[in-house]
Length: 440
Image (cartoon, rainbow, N blue to C red; front, side, top):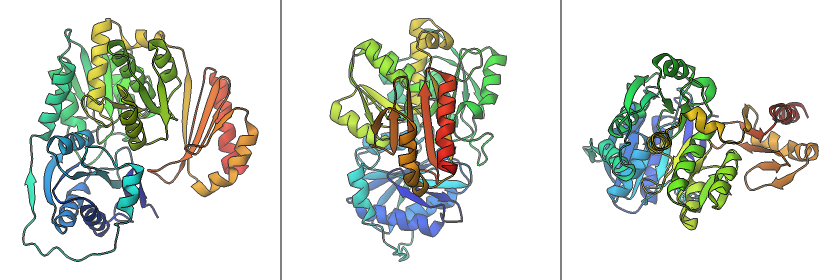
């Protein structure tokens, strides 16, 4: 079974567990859950999205919901337009960072945010196996082609163009950000060099914009002598950075740089999740502000941002949330903030990063189930000394390191993330956790 249904949405392998019938069922159930009114939809470039789009429209129409279709657009564009058009909700057809054989539905509430835990529980109760066909003769849907342009316009008007031209490389992985991310940067005043920036159903690299997956952008930035490179995932909510030397600095540092810039302009609270780098504590202390940490998941971060009136937040997977534009992770917003940082400080990415303490962060995916993790949890606790946090899986915080072990909500695996000032120490600790989970 590949089908996963959680606060992060519905995900599965196409034609195995995720079929048009399943898509129809969940879209229909979401239509029943929402109050009467319009629903905004959008999708990424995956081939399966074409037929799944039809199933989503049929499912929503069957409950009397009128559909506004933005076409292929970034996920944050859908959330932005839900709020702008005062729609009752939204659905994005995207598996985000998952491999090409996967697809998914992400569900959006009327406020232009993903479902909270409370809302998700209410929606879950509406899921029923009712495959009653839609009796309408035609789909009730409007094609809305200007959503991306309006989203870009909002970002530019909020951030303002930069005053010095930067040479910027963009690798959108042929996903939904292939038009929006380069155009946003051009409107911000940058000279943009494109790599993998066309809509295509086949991704030229692994979709997650991690260090190991964006080697082509690293070589591109170095050979073209660019100031910076940006890579995003297929739905353009996560952003990764390559410095002027062609070195990938790690997607966890995207939020660090964006936060440093915003706090230099306006002091305020910051929110991130338990798996994000300890550099966020450094940035918060540098600017004299409070940092909150939540469970992993955008909805959890956004909920705390709203209740604390945070000025910025996000997740260490490259997700920047800037509430003046959008209460969601937005790669275009993140890129706009970071080119401002470079232009205003007159420094290269490597120079800015050199001013920060050096941390070594490791991320591992273990192909085991949540049951195996639950069985081995006490063994892991006994193996390490540190403060324990059970908010989201298990987090162990020692004097100069931390480990976070938790079942994924988007894949059938357990994630192990660790960070320390000592590379050898954290490599050994992560290896020890891996050994316990597989053999202990």
